[in-house]
Length: 298
Image (cartoon, rainbow, N blue to C red; front, side, top):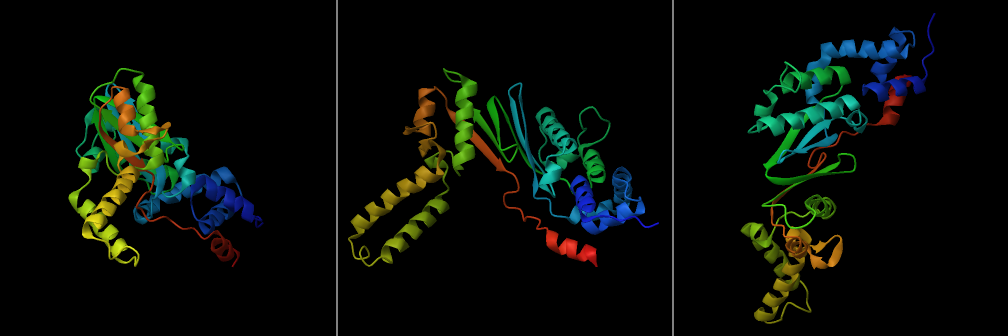
């Protein structure tokens, strides 16, 4: 006797497994509508198609942190869907990868993949493949940052953004509070550079050329003396610095001072910072739910 499988049941299975709706419908039909058996059915089939998952777009995921014993780590681990990124198994894997980086200081992702995973005889790459089969989606370790010394890590939006900062000491106040405030500034204001000196010369020159072209294309300003134009460009560059250079930005918690001044008042000297945002620069997977439903109905 044929079992009537509803679209709602198919969608529920899809949300649990991340598998396409047609495959979910096939699994439910094959298991007479038993949801748990259907999950097992799809996982078993995953063993046969695991290699294909490597070509899927993984632009969701999480930024996992590790901060302890004067070591700070950020690592971006990507998945195909935001649903899987919230899976406890996925989060546990990402946290384990962060611990491996903290302990072993790998040179790059390739070296990281060959290292032993915590509380396991398997390598990070072996465990990654295992999670791909269990979860049913492609999983990639994209990048990481690691610092030693007076470090602090901050996570925003449930792992959507991660910030790692390094100072040359812990200052004269509440280090954790002061460092967290700087991290929140970086997370919110997205500075590209630490200080004026760290802005590459070609970036600065390009900005000057753009500003000059804007002035030349303005009939009211184009015929002004070069000395005046140079002064105008310098004024506009000040705005570029306040928008893009961390130490020149207005401090998030007290806009009457710059971040640089606020750090000075706390006795802190910021050496470096890293800001990761989940999936930045990656192509996003675009699911067409309506098209999948239409195809399923045929």
